[in-house]
Length: 315
Image (cartoon, rainbow, N blue to C red; front, side, top):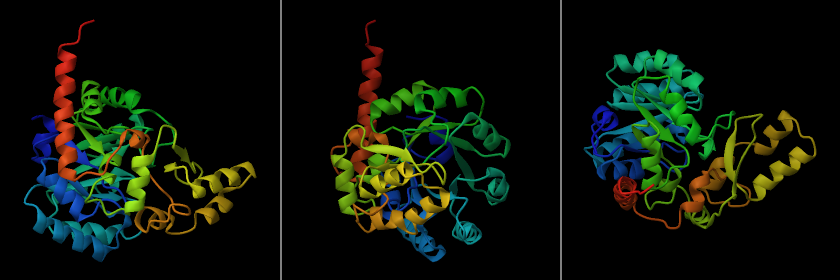
């Protein structure tokens, strides 16, 4: 399965495990990398010293390529970048900010840079900033999302028309068949988050993993657009948000309701009522909690089966 993405990262399969807050620590990243994909440590929920520990443990757990995902709105981003350079991390995915801010600096250090976008406009800006690849993430994705609500089915071919660097599809991809579909639309690889949340190695709380497995169609919703659009499972906290909207809550009231550490409370500490539970629409297709290596193997086998079925399709 060799193409521009596998060559860029030095990996076996064009499968990237998303760097999700409270789920993507060194155990998950190293397990995915050891299985032939690209594991990412999610730095968005880590203090600088915690990130240092996760990078060092990941380096001990795998000799395969892995990377770090950093939301550029993170308050201690300068320290995080210093640690990444100091420890010799070779791949960085940036998101939630202007790619011009850090791309040149990272590339000067010999680091491969990928930026996550939700629109053609920002994909073009990322390529102009000099990134090595782009992740285009559709509306189906879990966690923080684009305001335009463009689905992956539309976003991938739209972005493909306007860029020349390798393209990675994200949002609603949790099976090998979906991986094939994304690549037929023009992607060189896929970034998968939600399916890896329901893995043994994910650092998220077991209660959250189980709720993901139990989720059905329509159990997630994009909300809080006034602050930062985020797709959540519908629990008590989500219902409290809806009630606030019905009562005409403004931005300050929504901020007060969200408070601090709400995502940690839910996804990491296991409060399924009051916590913020970020997951994608594809949760309705996730039915078990598996080792990350098995998830990668399943994706590859499903991809090959879907490709063979398509080749034999009679129309």
